[in-house]
Structures are given as C-alpha cells and as structure tokens.
Length: 186
Image (cartoon, rainbow, N blue to C red):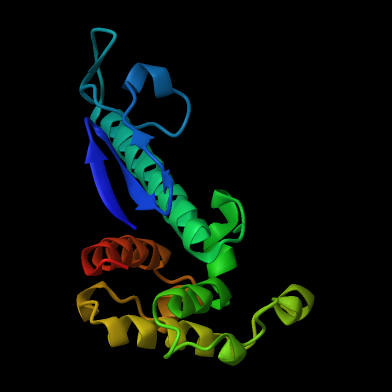
C-alpha cells in the first residue's frame, strides 16, 4: 500500500490495485470541472481575464481534490475489503468515523478492536443520523495512527471530520497514512 507517480499520473497503490488520476488538457475539460496541463492564460489564442483565470484555477483545484478523494476511496476499499459510498458522497460517509475506525483496525488491530467500533453496521446512523458517540470512532482511528507513529502534523481534528469543518485535511491524512504504511511494509 503506498503512493506512486508514473509519467504525469499519480495514485495510491493498494493490494493489487492502483488508481491513476491523469492530467488532461484544459480544452478537453472545458465546461466540466477543469484542470489540466495547458496554460491557463491562453486558450484558443484568446487572452483570459483575471476572473476567468481565477475560475479555471478553482476548477483545477476541485478536479484535483476529486481525484484525491477517488484515490483515497479505492485505497480504503482495498484495505477494508468492502465498498465505500460513491466518491461524491464519501465525505459524508466518513463523518461517523466507522470506515476510519475499520481502517484503524486494519493497520493496528490491538488499538482498534472491531467490537469497540460504535455503530459498526451504521444502522443507527442511517436511522437517526450522527450521534456524539460517533466521535469515538474518529478518536480510535487517531489513536491507531499514533500507535504506528504517523507524524501528528498530518492528523485532522475530530471536528474537521465530524462537523465537516476541514474534510480535505482528512483525505490528505489518508494519503499520508497510505505512504507511511507502505514505508513500514504494511
């Protein structure tokens, strides 16, 4: 399990899987989420305004983040051996911490026992929504990362996940975790 970069493509490797998020030309993505390798300043021999360039940059950032989300999702699915919610719903699916706690059990089963995961089948979450005890799942995941020695600079806060205050930080932490586990040989 780890991170790889191959000729302009990058992705997270998992057991027998690797997702590559390919850079595509701007003209090909025009009208979609944006992104790419062509100059943001000139397209079809026309100069763009500052506002248009800013919008293209925002679209590029959104596209790259969706790629990171998909990479994290595929890596977690490979580790957990189960399907996760679609990429567009993944952030919401991580809020209750169940998938994160299961991931913690994958790489540190002594710290995160499956029996200790609150609402493991997510029946309560689906019926009534988030409960404050779901934060226990996030805390268990953080404790598992602490146990293996992942530097704390990568850790999101519990509220970043539970309250969706900074979900990109959670996703980038999952990327850092995959690389760290790869370096540990796990």
